[in-house]
Length: 616
Image (cartoon, rainbow, N blue to C red):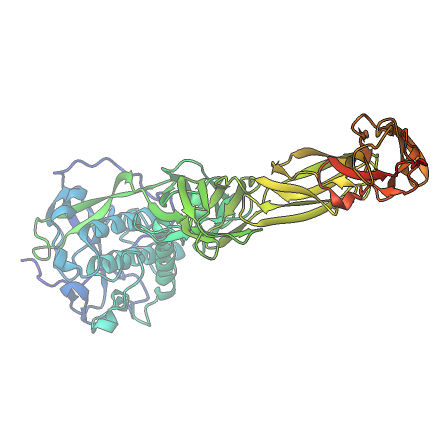
């Protein structure tokens, strides 16, 4: 009858080299094959080191337990020197000669999950396969002797491998193959099988640690990758030329992996334990990067079972044909958004309600400045944006500006409106040739609503220049302080256009006069006797200079030509008419220019004549 609680046997194989099968080669396995189990107790009878091999009764996680014993049993396939096989049901009994049927990895599909409180059956299977990959794979020997170094290494290898298999089965290994301390839960650790006085203790745990490290490295992702696609995100930051992030792998396994992403434009560069990811363009949203192990295989797990899990007789596992064991890790990348602040100023102080169009990196919007002349835009993807101000007729056109948005920062862009201006040139002419020093006044309301009130004086060439005048129409141009001798020119309307010179001309016309002289008899008004009012000669004098002479007609009148107004014009009689005495009075014309406003003016002088009296 088979024992129901046979002492736990720990048989391990020497780890020959990581990643390479040692001992016998892997043979093909067909489900449904049968095998007979054999047991080899150690230490052997010839082994001089008999003490320290045993252990007390132990209780493990997952409800597993074993009684105490003073030796270990090596389990083999089909003969005492057959291929070593490993117990996967701690404390379940077995006897030499028991028959088993082989199962492939589908054995684990229906494995009771309550037998392991830490990891699911699929993970148990994967870890046993990896332990088989890096543990010892060979046959037992009934002549093992712990004093023989080679034998000692093989026996230590068995035990080390079996310890790790059982730790995996009972729940002392978590999802990252880290050890779970059963003592913290009031249970025994599997490692307590090895007493402090065990003759192979240091060798067992040396190989135990080596296998553990190899299995961890087998499944180890670069430290910044996660086994789940919903991994945390790393930020690509703009470095002035591209978006970039450099990550340091503290696990030092970067060389075991290749890196891909479904997003185009990402570049990956490995230098030692650093992975640098770059992109010339800002990525949109979160992008997942996948790490895949270059060589991803493990030993397949063959299970020899009686068909009862957690009872019946002991089930065993051994290595099978190599299977795929792809290690895939994930990390997410993102480009954090940035902000833009637009600040508007203008010459006339009007900054509210100015429209700007902002485009770039998939963004396009028209925004309007607030009362402070500002626009704040948040959550922009990093990259280059163009900002264009809506054209306003009173301002000079603003050049479109390019703004680089950097993740986590606020880029400021400034626009200042300068009012449009033009120029006016006034060309001065005058009848008497005076053109220098004449003052002109330009005034009115510009297109911007600001007043224009400017003065300019003609230079020696007779040109007065108004520079940088705010544009507008219906400005008034007038000459001011016009010398009294000139007719004041009429004011003109003027339009100032942007970046243009408006030309105006102003001509000064001298004020002129003509005088009508009427001669009459001083006593009667009409001629007396043989006298006549006709034929008298008068001169028109400027100062004391005779300019022209005129003769009265039958009505005693004459009208002069036009002369330039001045204050020293006089009329003097040169020759009297028949029957009259010469008039010696100098008659002022009254042609002072301040008396007149227009160019051609008329005045009149009445002169009287004294008739020659004759004796009676």
